[in-house]
Length: 128
Image 1 (cartoon, rainbow, N blue to C red):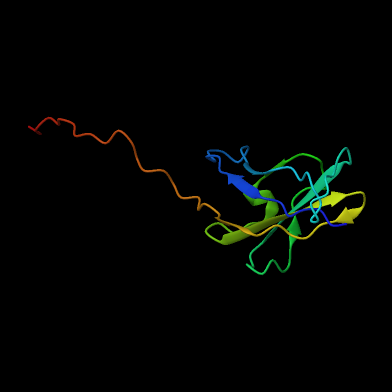
Image 2: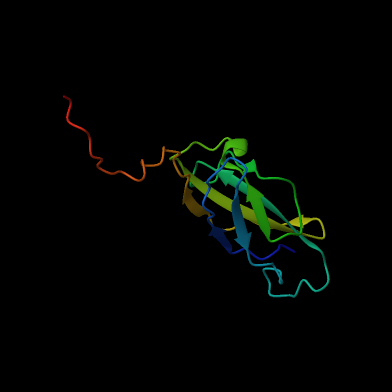
């Protein structure tokens, strides 16, 4: 039996330092593709990213886990700033791995310097 496709939702966090990361989240799989409930069987998930919409050359983020969120770091994953990334996930139940979820598209934020703040005009003495 194959696990039901996953619905993924990307939660974007503002990245203000290299210590912060991004989080992917999805709904738990509760049925097989034929509608049969998974019941008490343990469901684990594998999460991937690719620069190809056809999901070729998948790079796994972390290892299989029963969590329905996955934290990742752009720099650690080697994602190119400004590039379009496609995420997908698979459910695994009883050793059977399901099909890829429909890809989720995300553009990796560029890291540009902040704008100068507190711009002001100051008085200056006239030279004598």
